[in-house]
Length: 107
View 1 (cartoon, rainbow, N blue to C red):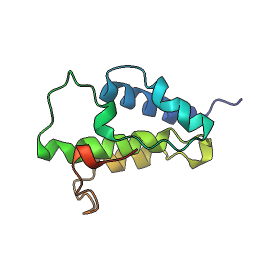
View 2 (cartoon, helix red, strand yellow):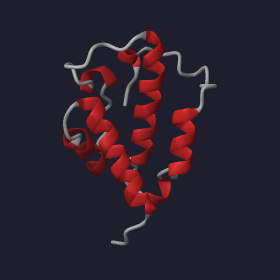
View 3 (cartoon, one colour):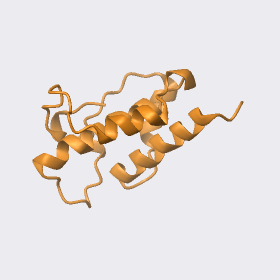
């Protein structure tokens, strides 16, 4: 196994999901490695100790989780670069496709 920047990208995804979940995302990662199709709603993994986000914050959280999930791709070449993650997180002109609410987003 070679250590590259793609390992750091994966680690970023793990840390980001850990923050959202309030614990290590191991239970969420296992189905990814086993390649089983288990779609869970974002609200199901959300750390319930955190106050529910405002509707303005929901889009930011959705973008963060989508970026984190992209970082968790099994194949390192399929993972984004940190520049791409940065651009996704700082883009204030979010696509209109992010019109879902937190409780509607599936992972």
